[in-house]
Image (cartoon, rainbow, N blue to C red; front, side, top):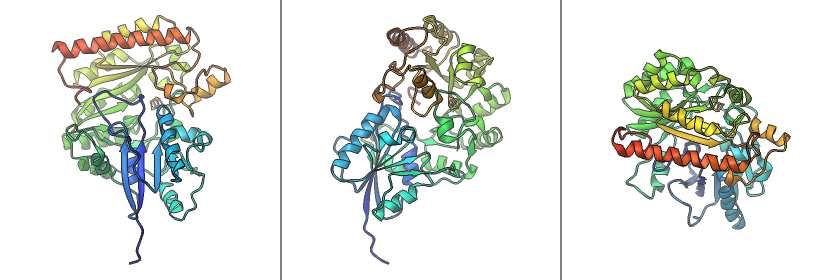
Length: 416
Ligand code: SF4
């Protein structure tokens, strides 16, 4: 066999405030999945900065960086460092897919969209010394038979070996929703593309843990597949945390199947109770839904609700902060997350606010959902920031009281 020189690939998931969950760490799935299709001439080191900061920059022949908006500044810093050493840098992910020209100031190549089927070509071009500036595909990759993610690379890089992170499994991609603030429909498409059930179960078994994150943005969107999946999960005896749109939760049969499958926490984007705001941001799936009834029926089945809300929408007055606190308290939301509306690149919300001249900051490090980067309609940016901060503090105090009083069973996202 001919001698093949091994090349070192460094894959980095840069840190941002945006997806920090306090004590719980959910390593990102994207890079371990790409690493799984790496050829044998590559020696791969994977650094997820949420668990291990890239303090000293290790040697690499090629650097691949996954970029979300809130981590773009850090991603560009890492890219600049390696490019100054003459080491080629490839970037991919939602942020650089929306702004490839910006990314190319800090990278040699940018992969636009889902990288799965482009990655082999990128590596081949690197090996042959002919890396292109842009890699893009007009079709969505076939996700039915994705490889098994290389979580071993994440485990190997963990500094604190005593704390086990929660690993993710993806059953499909895409969301039929059309929320204007979200880049999932544009990036992954508005059709839910399911995987082959056996390969999903293979990935769950390979993780070898009793708890996991089903990371689909809208797990129940492929209705029939969701039923098959929940039934298979029931037999595995795992506990899991997932994400779902309210649109699929109005039905006792699916709620029973969720509970029986081991679902213990469900992240739900309520966003707002205002029908005008829901219409404004294209979240028709939440309109006229019985929020309180759905939360109660989930709680009755032992499924805790991680509720996500947005403030600063165009119909929000200052009354929204007190109303939101009351709603969260009244409906026993287990973990509330209140975000300031944030116009991420690549979203229809951003296009609209740009056209209206309402973007006030392009400092990506401030796109962390706790800063105001646009002009709200019915309050000043300062008021929005201050009142959001006050609400967040009040909710934090509420959580501390609940979890320290002993009335709340100490089992949740805090120790999931
Ligand atoms: S339902 Fe969720 S994932 Fe789908 S577009 Fe809306 S916010 Fe995005």
